Image (cartoon, rainbow, N blue to C red; front, side):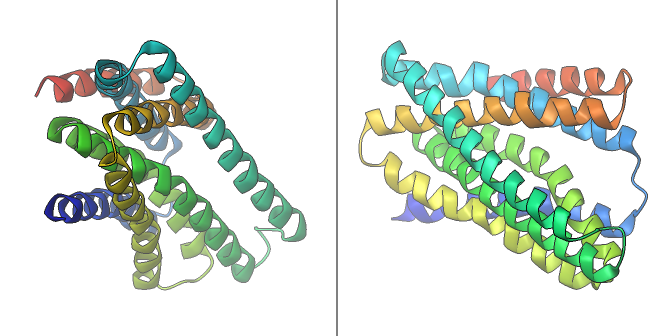
Length: 250
C-alpha cells in the first residue's frame, strides 16, 4: 500500500510539473517562438527514444520472451493510434463549427478541447510511470523525467489559446494542473496492475514503449519539423537522446 501511494504521488508530481511549467510559459510568453517549441519537442522525443531503447524494452525482455514483448509493443502502438484518431476527430469537428480566430469565446472552447485531449494522452503516460516503478526505481524516475519534459509543450499548447480567449492566468494554471493529474491516475492504475505478476509488468512496459514510439514518431518529431524548418529540431533530438542515455546509466 505504501509503494502504491508513493508511485501515485510521483505520477501526480511529474505529470503536473511538466504541464504546469508549460502552462506558465504559455500565459507569460504569448509569442513563444516556433524555434523554441521545436527544440523542446525534439528534446522530449530524443529522451523518450533513449528510455524506450535502453530501459523499457530491455527490462521487458528480462521478464518475458521477445514474442510477448513485440505483441505488447504493437498493442501499445495500436491503442495510441485509436486515442489519437478519436481526439483528432473531435477537435476537427469542433474546428469546422467554430472559427477559432473569431472570438475569445471560441478560442476558450478550443483550449478546453485541447486540455481534454491532453488529459486522455496523460493516462497511458501515467501507466508507463506506474509500471516503471514496479520494475525498478531507476526506470520509474527515467520515465517520469522524460514524460515531464514531454508535457512542457503540451502545457503551452493548452495555455496559449485559453489565454487568448480571455481566461484569467490563475484559472488557466488550475486547468493545466487538472490535466496533469490524469498522469497520477494512470500511475495508480499501472502500479496496481503491475503487482499482479511479472508477466503483467512486462506487458505494461512493452505496451508503454509502443505508446511512446508512436508519440515520438507520429507526433513529436513531425510537429517539431513543422514548427521550425532548421537544425534546431535535430540538435534537440540529439541532446535529448544523450540525456536519456545518461539518465539510464544513473
